[in-house]
Length: 249
Length: 279
Image (cartoon, rainbow over the protein chains, first blue to last red):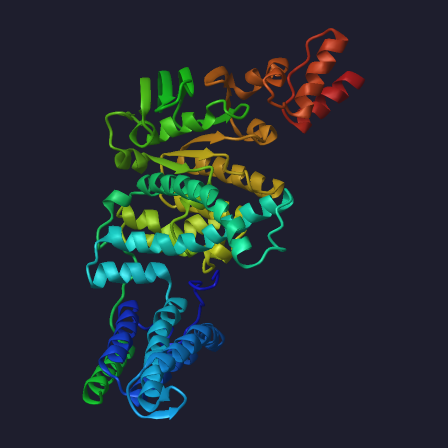
């Protein structure tokens, strides 16, 4: 979780792509996955996800996300095959159509969940925000809200573990409890976490105000985000995916 | 110039005033150190200088604060911020970016510094604070002390006329703390900026600040040239402010020997005094 949004520096094609193009790429993959019901097209989209991860130089992370999604995928697959009542029975209550539908649903889930996390791993959040403001003219306030939220995640996790350590030092045995009991122990920690978070947000508001937050315009950004050849190539790939998804349903 | 006249301030929903009748002036190019026990109102005072009080923190505000000719009550906070750079005590809340370079860019971009001037400002801030090697790092990977330096660099890049720092060395080791103070001192010499620092490390204040203000329970109980304030070492100790050991020594000697001794604020002066006594 801590590393979920951590930027992995590099010079890969994906790194050098315009942040807006990267976002477009993820959106297109998701849209294509919902247009098509064809299992081969979905497999192709999954291959595209994996290709993004490997080209960007984060194969470990890619496989980790895949592994993380496996549990939910298997659960969903079993549930779907058991509940789907249409088609010819193969054995017990499992039907051929049931298997196919389950596979489609699960593949779609995996395909949709992967690209955003991968792209965020190789894009600096500030670049994403600045590009959205400059290129798509998203109001800066919204871009700032998103970047701040992402920036706060590791900080909150750090704070959470600080609070837990402080409690452990005073005899709360977090390490011995499991399941619901552990949840019961963690829930009361939300109050101190919430209080420190609200206070922190307040301080951040003051800090940005004294550094000219109110003066920022779309033209303020120092870095420029032009579209290049890589982006043109990515757009062609995007168009190809959409066409394939529409043609082969 | 910073001119504070009979300033009293009570935070909204608080019973007791955080500042009581504070009158304080800092001339252009001055270096004021603020010291005092916890809860004395030091942070509230620097908030009032930067204009965050009364613009952000509400409450009962009496008296006047004038910064670089602007009355802080009448001037919008953004205009005040052009003149006053502020480094807050809680560094993590102050940092808005995920990367070091972006953090320094942030203020420069907002205040509309011409883009042609930005690379030079970036280099200037990073090098002056001595963190040029951290330029491409992510904030999350930095230690508390390194983050503190990034926060200082991000404010220095803006080249404010007045620099206000609330415990800027809280997370720093002794060597880095000294570096920060030498940096402030050199900026003051090179650009004539005014520096106000809340600091607990009295040795550093003695060496670098030319004026001291001692606070207790919301009031400034002593202020003046550093040496004059230290002359009242007994009073300071009573307030819980530790004086430099050389100062305590010179005071103790003057009491024991029954003759007035010069107030020592650093080791060299103490050595001269000791040699003089032995001769």
